[in-house]
Image (cartoon, rainbow, N blue to C red; front, top):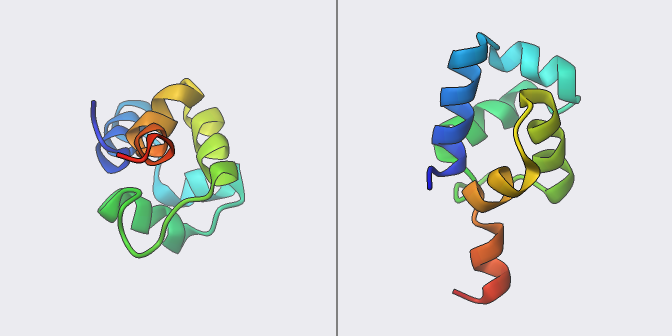
Length: 79
């Protein structure tokens, strides 16, 4: 399973969406989007559940896939 950074980069490249366009669609500030692209969910800037849901909707990705890429299931399981 790809991490959040890889999933976002691949999807944005495939759909030809820039970080600025994604920020406009979601309301998430561009620097936060760039941080997610660079560091994924494990970096110093961590996405909230609401931000992950907005990213999934804007990129037309299943929310469970985005949550898994962000490591949400692993964190809930205590692993």
